[in-house]
Amino acid sequence: YVRQLANRLTDEGKNWQVINKGMDGLTLSKLLQNFTESALSMQPDILTILIGINDISLMQNTGRTPAQQQDRMDCFFGDYDRLLAALFPKIPHILLLEPFIFSYPAEYINWLPLVQRMSQGIKNLAKKYHLTYIFLQEPLNKAVQAYGAENITTDGIHLTAKGHEIIADLLYTYIHSRF
Image (cartoon, rainbow, N blue to C red; front, side, top):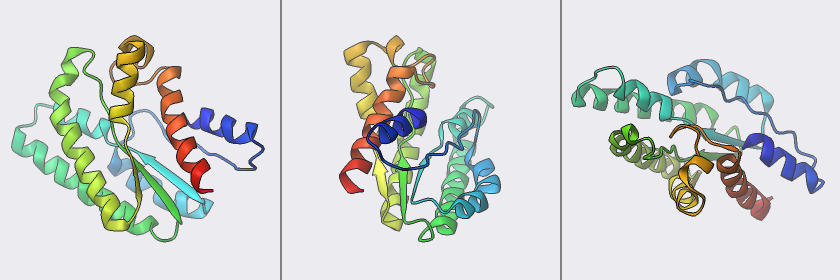
């Protein structure tokens, strides 16, 4: 979605530099360790953060009890709060993107309560810091209904080109209406 967003901004003659610092398998604790200073040194006008599903994978796939999962979730929110405290207000516009998961394949249905809890916590942090929260789960679910899951996600977590297009469209609409 980052490349698609950059292409749309460029096609409109916007002179924006769009940098993607996302990587496969990134968890919030790794982001907090490695990215905060880098983000500040780039002095971005807008920063988007989409993180959390790899953290949920660690909660779900490592045999943790519900109490241990809750401890990990609490650590996640503590780390997210520290990240935002370091970035805000130095970066003028931070967009927090909702983590998402698909119920296809069926194994991810068990992840939905954790994703919903994580989404609510991130939304609460957005309110705390007066940041924008971009909903993704519902628009992606609607796209699955319209186009079929196989056209939106490759495996229930990662997106197809069409799935990325949906996120790029949401971000473009938000950015275009404000800048």
